[in-house]
Amino acid sequence: MLDIDLMWLYGENSYLSCVITPEKLEKVGDKLGIPADHRFTDYNDLIACPDVDAVDIATWNSMHVPIAKAAALAGKHFSVEKPVGMNYAETYDLARTAEQMG
Image (cartoon, rainbow, N blue to C red; front, side):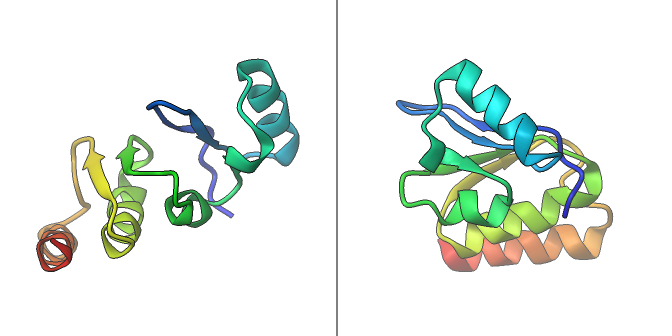
């Protein structure tokens, strides 16, 4: 399991992904009024949610490309903070994947 604290997506509805502990996810989700079916412990599940249109990635640099690539392959829009990737090759691979997915 990744050691990401919180991942938010904002929109008409809010979605929360927290992979530190399920207890933390429950506490934060309850405090913010996020329905249980919109709380995720894995970013892949969050990306697969049909209600999610876009993913904003602001986590450890080494996770930017894996999360962005998962979003691209799922047909979701994404944005990534700098640096996009850890090196040219993985960044180029992400760009090609995103371009191919449209």
